[in-house]
Image (cartoon, rainbow over all chains, first blue to last red; front, top):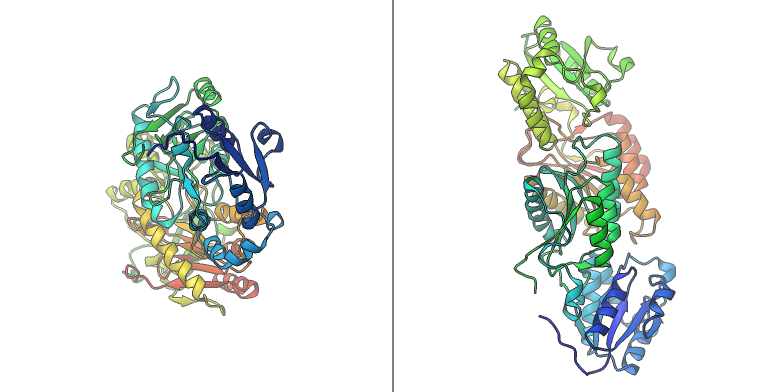
Length: 288
Length: 288
């Protein structure tokens, strides 16, 4: 469902790291809605966030966040950006957080899904409405089809199908948003390390002569987990993903159309075209 | 099925890297059968193999291998040891290999399973009988139960169950002989990089503060793939596995009893006891 721009106050964007929260903010503004960014200290770049109305919060400051959000009139919230499990020194606890602590700790013990859905549920019980980045800014998600000039060949199409099938099988285990498949062989599966670190591993395997396939073979597949609430932690790719995939000697990248955020799409397409990689949005029954 | 010692010639052991081929050779000798080691050049340590009757072959020398094996009267063969995808400079092609090349290349293009089962099938069509290391030397596989003095607690038992369940789900994709699970969260899944590299990744995640669980939490689970022919590439653990798991801050290691080779069991148990790790052989309906 796409949420139309409304007049009921600015959209509150709780920002983790990376370029995506800012891309979401800009896309929401283009659609005519005001935004208020809540920048998480230690994750967000101060210069980049300066272009938008914003205030700073720390992980653990539930009470401060609620006061600020209400003062700014934000009822609708989006939670977006990299939230690598916070180091303990970045956590600031306030009274409201301490009260919620048992629930938060339970959320922390599960996978990242549990952490984010746990926080989401607490916010909703406080009367906020949580939206997904793909709902407030649908134009920042991957469209169906090839994004650049290159297309997958038959081998790559086989790897894409097998990759998505495997990510589906892993989904119940709250793991595996990404994998690398080359000529039917699974080279790498992502768990806690993140997509970039997984691609680095493929670079290292290739440099050690352990892949035995020519460059331009294999696909990075990336999908939201099946049971994942897409309002949280939607997978994303950006120009760096393309560059890492190129260094890993892959033929291209396949993501779920409408279910994957494209950060800096123009740079991404340029990098893909220049390096000979395809970037494919696979049409998905859940998307839209 | 356990194969009894027989008098029909020495057992031919085609040796890849690591300590396990030598442990298998010694265990077979202890059971009263002669052995002849075929040491793969570039994979096997010359000093270690000197303790056994042996000859050298290179990857790609099918013709030479067949001549030697027949001359030595070896009809029964075991293929054991690390066979990291060979660098091209280690490959020596002889005439028989060239004749088999189309079949071998097909085998190379699939996963490691396909490579080994492909080679196995070619050997069997030549009249050799391929046995599993666990058949000729059952005493080198993990027994059921705890190997050392430490036992898994309730958290670890939950991680073990979840880990084996996930490896089962991955099995159809010819991937995932190992994973690391901590309090229900999947920290790492092994694909082409190998178990040690996967454990190093967990060490790095922990050092970067991205695990957020106390040391002594989490389990390395290791299982043969479900559809894997256990005559090839049975999973193995050794003292180094224990040390890497200890550095990764895990509580212990769980393997499939009868379906996992224990290299240097005495050193392994000492390392586990000293570092406070359990090593558990999980009883398995397929074993025995």
